[in-house]
Image (cartoon, rainbow, N blue to C red; front, side, top):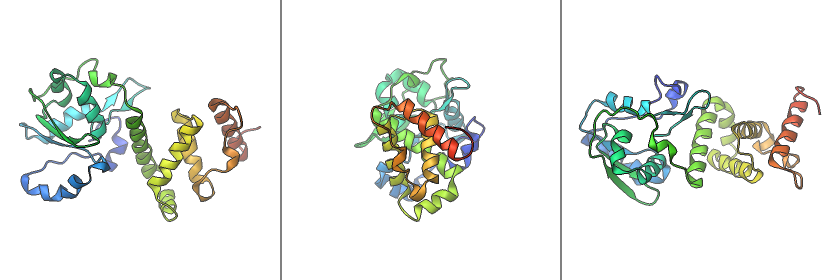
Length: 237
């Protein structure tokens, strides 16, 4: 799905679009039984050219302008659920394009939404689905998936070693919960925290990294960042 887009470097790790026929349904029965894995969603279309569907999704893949672009996770059933919940039915064609029906897990049950006008629709100048606020739960889930994908691509060998000691997903959940406790929310702060955790003994940061009493998240990050640079021989205290 990412081929030929600004996210082309992530193409090999997915997400992917597969065209299924009735005989293929047995192949995905395990996915149907485990929707809580948030593996994606199912769709049907009167247009059988999968490239038309792929093009529609790629055109909606990147949100924002350089240098503040972000990936719109069209393939994520949680993102799809939130969009379809907030959009009006007459906005579905611009969003779903050639897709006539989607079947997705909405967090508690399987849901089906119909698109009354499937076809090739241009991308609006101001897509309504980009103005929908995310819930804290959805934001945390998307953040987890994005960081997980990045680490699996950029730190593969380290993750293999980490997995020999503990479950990677549980470890990442614990680390992200700690960043929220510390109030570290910026991308730079999250990247620094996670990558330094991978370098730490037993993959957990020492107590000396924890915030001091009455220390603001900004001051806390600056202190730890400066100390880290110093011990790496790249800065001074």
